[in-house]
Length: 441
Ligand SMILES: Cc1cc2nc3c(=O)[nH]c(=O)nc-3n(C[C@H](O)[C@H](O)[C@H](O)COP(=O)(O)OP(=O)(O)OC[C@H]3O[C@@H](n4cnc5c(N)ncnc54)[C@H](O)[C@@H]3O)c2cc1C
Image (tube, rainbow, N blue to C red):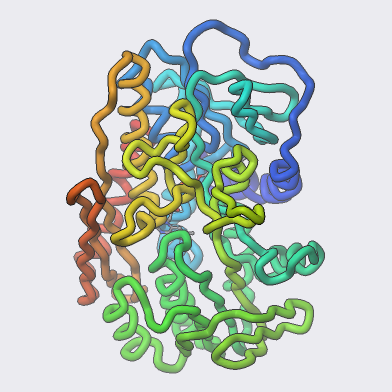
């Protein structure tokens, strides 16, 4: 693991670079340049080396050692969104979130390439990156999410950029996390407004956890402010009971929860938001625009559109069991970018735990295909711990299970609303075990 100060410096430097380079993707820059890494071995290219992508790479090397595995990732260092709310208020150290990418790759035998992916050419089975293209036999897309600022600002790029820079949501690793941490540390008081995206969005309970922890920080440091949560839903979900009790019992003076607050207009320059629950002015804000599948899925033509060319739901349309593109069994999507998988509940929770499972599932599927076999569909599970109190450290949790029912995937959900220090200990244990599974350490 890299040391804490070095890691932060890398992170800060990265922020600017990745933010600018990221603009190229949607445009689909297909360089005429030459093939990078030429060779004849059958190859799996993994686009995005986050929770899903790195898991897939490691399991593929284990399950199909004759395949070459290449991970393409814009960030040289792994920064974990899970546990990052705790890091924002100094409950967790930076070293716990950040992981070296090169040593795990060398150990497992996959290639980690630090580069920006600029386009996907499914016809010619090529992934374009800065300076050339990489050929693939199978492609796994695990690019996470994008912020759909256009839902608020249309084509007004200045408003979107101003919002991203001044009121970052910190839902994509990693520069925004640094900006938000500094914002929290420098916050002097007043209303800190937090908009929640409409569902489905990345890690559904995590905005409420973030509110609790910022409220705890305000209370501890006697900052005369409050967090105003603008939720488009009619109530807190999941673990609604546990969060509601934390809001009422621990943060009565620090948190104001507003349900049914669908955003209709955002004026970041004048710090005003209009919603279906009224208009709000703010001293500072964490503005979360709607989430959609990461840019690469759009570029690869995997987001379903209707007859007018408008996106149906903004997520990747894949086979619900094997996670491959409906018209292309050589291309898979995993993690948060996946669209609905069941008419019974819609989307899998957009969680690192699920992305980790997807990585394992898709490694099994590609290994089977590479040996000429039809894979057996697998199902994930999901559990998510949320810290609601910083002192003592008490968490609540939600547990999801899946099974097949008459050719459909069925979900059961259990909320554990009683906060306890035991659940926080389980959370640390979960993260430690899962990082170990992803990186093989
Ligand atoms: C505050 C917060 C708390 C959370 N807490 C939890 C939790 O407690 N438990 C849990 O299970 N989940 C949690 N999550 C959710 C979890 O972070 C995501 O579900 C998980 O990261 C999804 O994995 P992924 O592989 O789909 O995307 P990511 O992990 O985001 O990986 C996508 C990768 O693709 C790369 N990429 C994208 N485009 C390009 C490009 N053009 N070129 C090169 N690289 C590219 C990105 O840099 C990134 O590394 C939390 C999320 C947040 C924001």
